[in-house]
Amino acid sequence: MKAINETENINSRIRKDRVFLGLVVLFSVITVSPIILIISKLIEKGYKQLSFGFLVEKTPDTMEAMTAIANNELIPGGIVNGILGTLLMVAMAAVIAIPIAIITGVYLYENQGKWLANITRNVSDILQGVPSIVLGLISYLWVVKYVTNGFSALAGSVSLAIMMLPMIVRSTEETLKMIPQTLKEAGLALGIPYWRVLTGILIPTGFSGLMTGILLAVSRVIGETAPLMLTALGSRAINMNISKPTSAIPLLIWEFYNDPNMVDMIWSSSLLLMIIVLAFNLTAKQFAANRK
Amino acid sequence: MNTNILQVKDPILAIENLSVAYDKNVAVKDVTVGIKKNTVTAIMGPSGCGKSTLLRVLNRMHELYENIHTTGSVTLNGEDIFKMSAIKLRRKTGMVFQRPNPFPTMSIYDNVIAGYKLNGINQKKQERDEIVERSLRDVALWDEVKDSLTKKGTFLSGGQQQRLCIARALAFNPEIILLDEPTSALDPVATSKIEDLLITLKEHYTIIMVTHNMSQAARISDYSLFMYLGELVEYGKTKNMFTNPQDRRTEEYLTGKFG
Ligand SMILES: Nc1ncnc2c1ncn2[C@@H]1O[C@H](COP(=O)(O)OP(=O)(O)OP(=O)(O)O)[C@@H](O)[C@H]1O
Ligand SMILES: [Mg+2]
Image 1: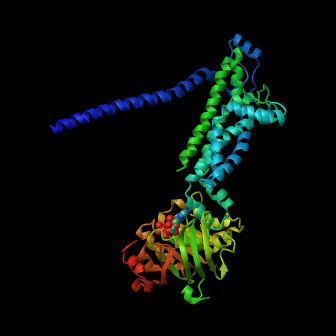
Image 2: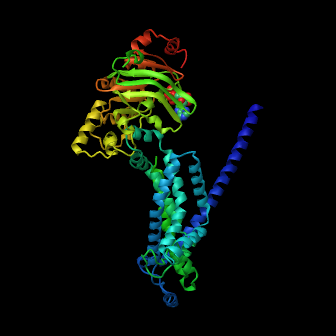
Image 3: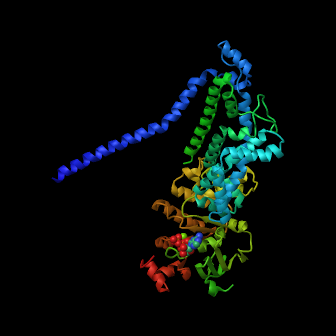
């Protein structure tokens, strides 16, 4: 009697296990399929435009594109103005955001439980939730109107830097919290001043964690479009002057979208953007894996 | 100097009426004791009796906590430790922690020389090499690591790591070495190596060690200090304390009645 009960019990458990496993597989597939569909679509539609020229030539105008399409040729030109603009603005944003964010993160780590630190942490978290277009507006008000007197790469960078700040602040604090307290104590016990303990021991020890946070923040802002529309505006020319309007890959995608002759360029630009973002993401993952 | 209160003649370190409190919680109560040069002094007592707190005041590591208050005085070679710069004091008093904690990003070599390098002290390479070799020889690690000085310190075994941490503390040629349960995370073989090492080190240094291990205290210490609930209950030659404890609480602790 007891034995029969037990087999029944086991059988029903096995059944439950199978149902559960089925659900897990189903949901995993649902989670993974969008990214696979996106990437395969981008490759399918974008690969033929991707060439060396695409990386080093400027955006064609709509007439050139129209002629090319009429002759059944590939659209000439590339998006080097967007690539360089993105590089310029993201690099400048990183230069602005990283030192401020790391110092803030160190401050939060050193002042756990203090009211000013708690307020700072909360404000930083709220900042993370501010829609990016609002950050663009703020940068428009501050930089476009008063600093560069016009749309500029600097204004774009400021809006991206504000976006990056809270992400790096958080990752810095979390990274430092994971470093054993005794490493800091060992440094101080050697008579090393605090700031050298920080720069010579704590930051090198947490380097992978800090890099992970920075790379994720970078990969997050590379694709931002809305704030750049209000700040950097875009440009057909290559511009490396930080006080002048500047292009960016996502801005170009938006411009191509509004031009019926440029449809093919949308896909190749998106594919390139996706590749760049993925590269940053994978590098960040690599750093995170190295942490142990 | 009053030999009666401090209980030893010409102490290198004189602790007088030292009290330490975390907010209102008094962790060390009115401790007065002198530490003799070139000896090993063991601090014993049940968990939470203030051993680590007392030890950390001696190189002012307690200042990392903001809620901590001290009264009384501590003098090192007659100099008030609270009046000298913490950095100077800490170079004269090396500290070794419970768990080996070599700096994980640094090589063995850099770990030993870290105190100099991170203090921005400029030296010739030859000088550095000499300090590293002397410190590693002092802890009997030189022969084991001399061919792998560029490897990360964290690749060593636990016992080797702890000896590396002692070498790091010795690099500045301190007067005193403070150790807080330095062998409690180590296996018996590594432990006995560290014990032998401490006995040889006392020729050049003065050693103060917190330990939970009574037989360890009996094996290597010259003086023992028994604390209970923040008070210094008994202090004296280890031999005397173990054979003929003066206080009932010491006796109970040593015979395993509590702790
Ligand atoms: N940072 C701190 N803040 C508040 N109280 C503390 C702090 N550190 C220690 N204490 C308290 O001070 C007392 C003494 O602690 P201490 O760490 O010196 O004891 P200990 O003898 O080293 O104990 P153990 O053998 O467990 O290491 C304990 O009551 C402890 O709760
Ligand atoms: Mg302790």
